[in-house]
Length: 318
Image (cartoon, rainbow, N blue to C red; front, top):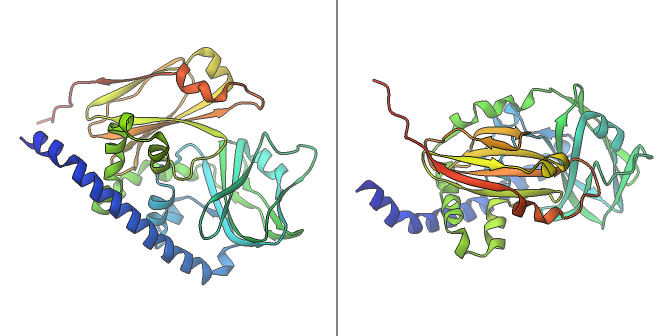
């Protein structure tokens, strides 16, 4: 009876969740914009996603509305808003020495529309400072480090030729906070993201552009994404051809329905089977090139087999 009632209420509840998310995103974004305007000294300081950051007021709600599909595999730093007249520059040598690969995305402010990006493959290795030309305006920066080195630094940044951001060292284990983040689950985050499972469930009849925008509002331009829903007590079987493994890094994260990460894994074998999840949720596989110049990038999904299989429910121990 409970299952039938849930099925009947699924779509209207998802619609209410969708509306709630949009309202909260606007409201929290407005408050965050005001906060940044009154805290200009923090604009030129790297903010690293970490336990310390999410413990601060408003940070967790901001992250759960602006970039809610937590990237458990990357060290992420944000910066800005910065006033730029003509260009900004990143110290590429610092970034290259800190991670196997990286991407820096430039967003306008306060709209957070993606303007351009620079990756470890696009940057010029003959220059210490890599220039990005921009129109006059305010911008924020999102930097993602993958396959971190032993010593990690977020790089120095120049704006119109003047260095205004100094490099900072980052603890190599800074992402350990993800192991306990599920403990922050509450009704608010559950209500925010309830609708995501539903649109993934009905993905075949919805516009793919709509589904992708809702699931990946700030997806990195240099990454291919494979994603879908996971029913309760189900697991994934993922098969990656050897050719794909030679060309791409595959990073899997499984989330609960509130979009909090349950577990994650870097897939390095041709066949990988996840553990079963005891609740409804969804998965996201980030596919990143190992080297530049790979062709047929957008045919990845056709070459990878992802199967959702039901498992026996876990019985409560007496």
